[in-house]
Image (cartoon, rainbow, N blue to C red; front, side, top):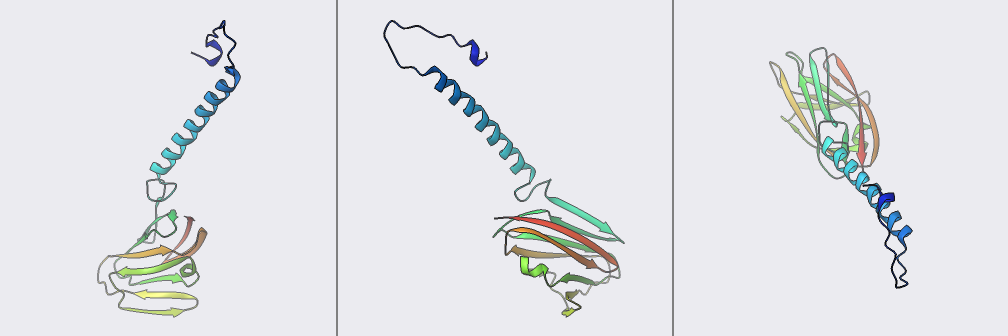
Length: 162
């Protein structure tokens, strides 16, 4: 039933019903209900943090990086690097750590150092290895970086919500 089909009752008593105001409020309720449902669907999909729309997997030269495209300020995110056999190094630019704080690298790197504006993490691994970097966003906004894993080079773009 449409709003225009609502029966108007004529009273014998003079009442101020403001029918037009009621119709306007009902329409406004539909708009806010649609906005709420849209926000809930986007949240479940992962556009405001973890979820299928946020999880991204990149692979090149036998290496693979899994990360969250969308992060929340103050909530830990995980950057997983799967190294192919024979690869032991991961290189992350120093400016990436202006946007993200490194809480932990698991397993712990055997050695680390800085070379050409990048932090080099060297791991003790004979076969394929999975390295997890636990990161905490330091600021809201877009962060773009290039991470090296052996011969592969990956470009990551992340958005951190406030």
